[in-house]
Each structure stands twice: as C-alpha cells, then as structure tokens.
Length: 407
Image (cartoon, rainbow, N blue to C red; front, top):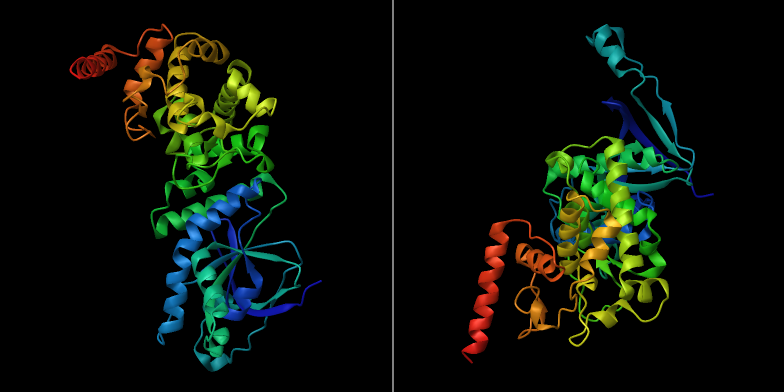
C-alpha cells in the first residue's frame, strides 16, 4: 500500500461528470501522475500517444518552468482509478450576520472538503500530459532550483473506470473533447483517441482484436507518418496506413468520421476490415509465408530487388480501394482479393515504375492513388473505376513509352 495523500478540494459537476478541484505540488505531480497507459488494450497505442502528444512539448515547458520566475501553468485534468479515494465534506461555519443568503449558503455546503487518496490509486493526465512531462523534466534537471518542487498547479480530478470497455471509452471521449477544444489534435492522436470518428474507432478495435497486431509481433508501426522507415524488418503496416485502409474499405455514409456511427454500423465495418486482413493472409502467398508460417520477415519484401505492393502502406491503400470497388460490383472480399492477386504486385517491375515506384530515387510514390488503382485493376483484367482514371493512366503509360523510345 502506498502513502495516503490528503488534498483540500471543491466538489462540483458538469454534465454527467462529477469532479474535484484541488492543487498538487510539482513534487506530487512527479510522484503521483503517470502516463495514460490504461486507456488502451494494446500497450503500443499508449506508448505512441506518449511520444506523439506529450514528449514533443515537454522540453519547452521544462525550460519555461526553469527560466521564468513568473511561471504559471494551466490546470491538469487527472483521471483516477483503483485504490480507495474518499471525499469528506467540511462543515463551514458561516456567521448569521455575514450577509450570505440561504441560497448562497446551500451552494457552499457539501462542496468544500478533503479528498483522501489511499496511495493505491493510479493517476494519469487526461488533459495536460505535456505539462506533467515538462514538470518531471524540470525537477529531474541537474542544478535545478530546489524550490521548484514546492510550486503548485491546479488539478481537476475525475473518476476513470478501467475495468469496462464503456469506462475506457468514456475517458477517451473526454480526452479527445478537451484536447479538441484546446488545439488541433494530430491525426495520429485522433486515430488513437477519437470516440466520434468511426474510422478511428474501427482502426483501434481492429488493432485490439486481430492477432496480427499483437504487441509482441511488431507488425504495426506507431507513428505520425504513414510509411515504414527503411530498416524496419517486422512492421507490415503503420497505424496511419491501417486507418487509410479502414477508410478506403468503407462504402457507406460520408459522415462516418464526423459523428459517432451506430454500434451495428461500427461492427459491420470492423468485420469487413477483419475479412480483408484474413483474405490477404489466405490468398496472398507472401503474406501467408511471412505472417503465418514465419518464413522470412516483412522487410524481406521491401527491398529494391523484392519490392511487394502489399508490404507497403501506399500499396495497401491502393489495394483496399480496388477491393472496395470490386465488392461494390458484387464480389465478396475474398473473391475481390483473389481477383487482384492475378495482377503483377512486384513494384520493381516496369509496370509500376513512375506509378507507385520511382526507379531513379528508389522510393515509393504516394501521390497517385487513382492512377495506381487504375493500373492494378488493369493488370488484374478488371474494368477501371471510370473513364477519367483510364484516360489518365493511358496518358501516363504513353509518356513513359515515349520517354523510353526517345532515349
């Protein structure tokens, strides 16, 4: 059992949240407030948020704390779970001749008190993660002013229920809401936390539920970019790349990412995305060899000599677009994947040069998804999406042919 902490606090409510307003010393912040690792099933998501949303600002805040005598930090919103937090109201003795009305007296009674933490609670910042990290850096710095530990920051405590999916969802929604109001959230943090964006919800559920993305396998890369760095041997896709796949596989209402879709719509799209992954594993020999039979590594298929479209996030996006199109024409997900695997999927081959692969710089081309989809459908012997994409593809192929003949 940890050491108890006693905090003077005001109890209040907004909406269906009860909250407690208090202050924490910098030393208490450093000792008690942890990273928000209990909001997600996969630890990788939590670590990623820590890097993306927090550490990038922490150094600047630590510098501000250390160098600014007039320093002031905004309030933290702190989630509390576990332990045995206890609220004890304080009776306020107000003289009858104080001029305070009965209505004002009733508004005070029961709201002032002491919040006792047993020491077994887990505290994490729902809003203000970067300030918490900055405080910790400032206190850990060599030669820092010892008086910093006695500085205070205001804190708002709310209860977090980590034992149920609904409890985690409720806290994620609060996290996203308060951060949206404060500043634009990076796309990466939106994917990890947004409870109104249907694509973000499905992406997280897919990561949490499909064995391919178990933490120990290392098959998904957490970062703010969509590509996989050179030298990464284990990742199959990135979380941003997976989000793009989830979007491209969707064929329903356009507001799916604007307001939270009904649960049945979320589950239906999640199942389609699972079916897509399972079809890749069963119908693409290279996927089965690496990811099921453990014969080789994903990085083996991202070399100049062996460069497979489906081991590149940009290629996966194009493939998902084409699968969705074929599904809209009546094919099942498995049938659509099987049909597209008839195409040449090796990017080192000339048919993909200057469409998805730049043979000069030896880098992926990510800005031509429409042309790449048209080429994939053409190579698989399928009708293109529309005449416009066909005309653009024909023009590009003609320019390539002209360039070759002119050499």
